[in-house]
Amino acid sequence: MSGRFERAVAAIDAANADDPHETLVRGARRKKELAHAELASEWIARLAPGASEALRLAARAHHVRRWEIPRSDYPADRAGYHRWRKALHEHHAGVAGRILRDAGYGDDAVARVQDLVRKRGLGRDPEVQALEDALCLVFVETQLADLAARMDEAKLVDVVRKTLRKMSPAAHAYAQGLALSPHERALLARAVSEERAGAEVA
Image (cartoon, rainbow, N blue to C red; front, side):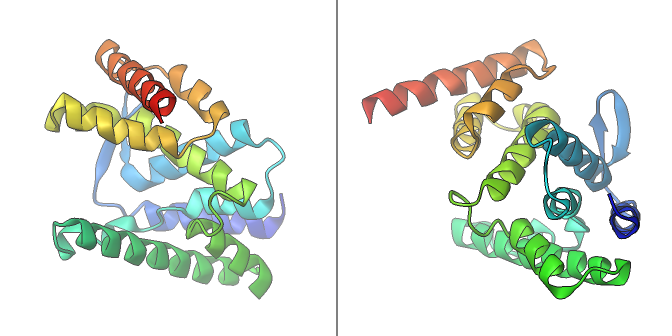
């Protein structure tokens, strides 16, 4: 990768290192968005070994400085959730754009990374799907246990089913190979089973 790529990744990581929130990742307490960005990069390397520079940058920047747009700033209903998600996409794209320009990227490269971060073309663009797969795998690996502690099982299984629908068959296979707790693995297996049964009925 180019020198500007290394500069951009370092700047994205520095921006995420300010995260006031921590999470447990593979046995270690880490800054949440910094850890998630690194994991997303790892998954892209596995899912798409020949990934473009833009996709690798988008994976690193997908949630850059996410904590600056808290969910509590928006209504708790479904419409509020969608407004929050849209605001996040614009926030991440804006921060990523400034970082990439400072690192030496031109308008076309910046626009491509921003489109990936916004997930434009999901369902049509293979790189957007690869990014979605990576983010879903990070979610299953790092957030399933926390949700299981706060959410009743039926609702959690529904959340996992919705996550599975976003993922490619290759990502499904990776998800079932994650190092999950027995309870998390049972939840995932139930979600997979119910999703398959639902697809057969449909």
